[in-house]
Structure formats: structure tokens, C-alpha cells
Image 1: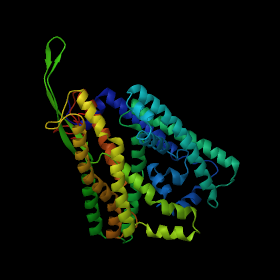
Image 2: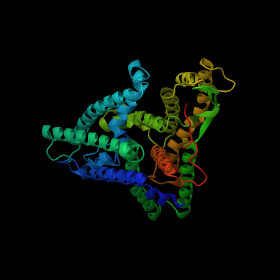
Image 3: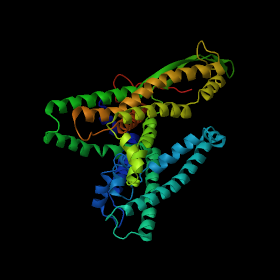
Image 4: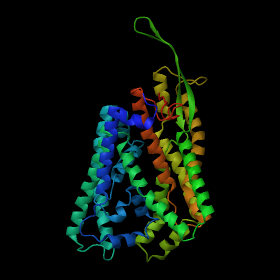
Length: 439
């Protein structure tokens, strides 16, 4: 057997088929992301979008690979489906019916998936209508504004969003990795070459020197390594499973396992929530430029200011704890351990176990929240320190790229090991992502 893990990817027939299928779907997605909505002047739209980078439009445009600024038929991307999924995840903490469905196993998940799809259609239509109105408000962008343009745009964008949702599901079912995440992943990395080009242009124009450029590269490498390490970091809580008598006198030996509490359990969601709030003043200014008090508030929360940094950081800290509390329930985990007869050494099963897990989770979440805040703010500090106008990655995009990349590599790793090939790492699996054992 070959020791080259890259070559092994194509030697495993099942994995080769999955990779080629995934690349084919991604090719379709990125092709559709360059077909413009009918009746639109893209140049006029791009000029208007230049002033909207610090608004909801700018954030959304990053997740769809610039499709919003080009008004493509897939401009809404996978975001309506992601929004619907997050909505049901948050509603589960409020409505017992949704929480019950989440715990019903495969049947409950199928029903929630159907509800998510229907909600995606509604959100797509609403967003498409709002976007069509926005397009018609740009002077010279729409050749023939009116009902027909609105109807055509709503239909095209809604169908495009549903098509993207279907593509993502096809990758998840028949390809490799999580389809929804991979669509966002490739939308983000598509913007990297042009952003690197702008950084190089700053160098050729003398805006940044050679030493500063080399130092900038070193900082980027260090930050990427730190993000990778923190993404995989976890606090292991030991769990003991006692001996059991199974069947006709057979004894199942006791086992030692662990519960991995991730330092960053909330992932990238706190930054996305914080961004959604911090850009409200800028978005309001773009929509109502003549209102004085809105302009004053927007000036107070402009990027590169101390007020922006402090507010943004505090919002990330808050949403890290908020989202972690939504997705991680220590009481349910303690009950599952108790049902299996497992226990944490030195901690009584039941309520005491839940309290212990909650206490550890609270402590672990603090450094994770601080880390997220730093990752989100570092690009702004780099822009100020190096005196450049743009920077080719932000905290949100970097976290998504690293997280999705690690998950996809881990899935390929598991498939290779099933085929008895060497994995990507000669010394073992990806720590804390390939050897996690959840109770």
C-alpha cells in the first residue's frame, strides 16, 4: 500500500467517487454563481455596493462568494437554509414540540428537515423581494423597473436558493463533507485570490513595504495555526462505564471514555450574531442617509474606532455564552450518562453531574469567547498597524475555512482508515476531531 495519503484518496474507489461527485456539484454551483439576473446593469450595482461593505449586504455577500454584489441567479446562496436551520435550533429552547422532535431520532430529524425546507422557501421569497426592491432603488441598475422585474427576480432568486439547498443535500448524501458548509467554504475561498491581488497592489503602489509584507505573511501564518489549534482544543471529562452482565452470564468489561468539551463549542456563530448587530447603524445609514441621528450613531460604530472594537468584542463574549447554552444541555447529557450506568469519577450521577459539567463548560467557554473576540478584531488591528486599506481575510471567514477544512479532512481520514490505507497524518488521526467518543 502506498504511503502517500493524497495518492490514496484516488485508490479508494468509494472515496474517489465521493470526491469527484463533490467537485462536480461545486462546479455547477460556482458556474451558476456567475450568471446575472436578467435586466440588470452589473457595473452600476458594483459601484453602489462599494459603500455597503460594513452593512448586512457586505456580510451576506461574503457568504455567497460575491453573488449579491453581482446579482447572480444564485445570489441568495445557502444562507436562507442556514437561517432556517438556526431559527429552529433557537426555537427548540422555547417550544417543547421542536425540542421533542430533536430527541425523537431519525423520524424527528426528518420532520424538522421538512419544516426547515418549507421555511427556506418562505425566507428565500421574502429576501428575493427585498433584494429586488433594493436593486430598483439604485439609479441606472435596472433597465425596466416595475412589477415584471420584481416578479422575475423573486422567482429566479427563490428557485436559485432552492436549487442551492438541493445541491448541498446532494453533497452531504453522496459526496464528502457537509454539503451546506462546503458551499460556504468555496464561496469564501473564491474571494481570496482577488483579495491577495489587492494586497499585492498595495505593495506595488508603495502603501506597504517589503519588510511589512513579510511580517504580514508571518502574522497570517501564526493566526491560521492558532485558529486551527483552538478549533481542535477541548477539555476532556473522564467517564467510567462499569462492568455489566450481558446475556447468559457474559460479562462486559468496564470501559474508560471521556466527554470532550470544546473550547469553542459555539463555532463561528457568535461572530455572525455580533456582526448582525454591529452593522445595524451602517445599514440604517445606507437606507436612510438623510436622517441625522442615524448618521451620528453610524459614525460612533465605524470600524477602526475604539467604540467599535469594545462593542464588537463584548457582543461576541455575550453571544458565545448564549449560543453555547442553546446547543449544549448539561442536564440531558447527565441523564444520558445515568441511563447508561456511566459516571464521572468522584461526582454523583444526576443533578450533581449536570452541575459539574455546567461549571466546567462555563470555565472552558471563557477562553473560547476571548479567542473568538480576538480573531474577529485582529484583521482590523492589522489594517491599522500596517496602514493598508484592505486585508484578505477576516475572523469569520478564517474560522469557517479552518473548521470546514478540518471536518472534511477528518471524514476522508475515516474512509481511508476503513480501507486500511494510511491517513493524512502518519502519527495518528486529527486530535479531538477523529477520536471523540460522545456518550
